[in-house]
Image 1 (cartoon, rainbow, N blue to C red):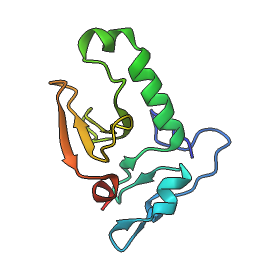
Image 2 (cartoon, helix red, strand yellow; image 1 turned 90 degrees about the horizontal axis):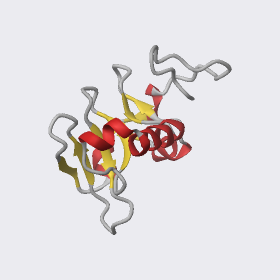
Image 3 (cartoon, rainbow, N blue to C red; image 1 turned 30 degrees about the vertical axis):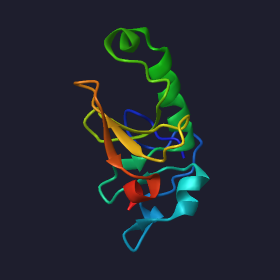
Image 4 (cartoon, helix red, strand yellow; image 1 turned 60 degrees about the vertical axis):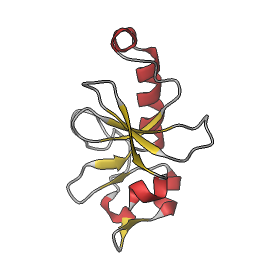
Length: 122
């Protein structure tokens, strides 16, 4: 499901499938994450983006000239979710390290938040 950035509603022609059902007993169902549909919490906030959004956000972050002038390069990071305040969660796929980091958009800092994606998703 691809959501409109402005309304959060499904894009034209997309089925309206609720993604809040991806949680089971307080944990994320791995099949939902791997499906590429993304996942949202009980308040409707995405805590794991859809595959389409992961691709588009990462391309935008790497190609925007204004962002390149403000921040350190994002090339090593694979962003997969946002904190709802402009900060983004990322993995570092080019390194044999499964940790999850939080990029702070105000300070450009990258802070360790979880030892692996599964822990982040709990």
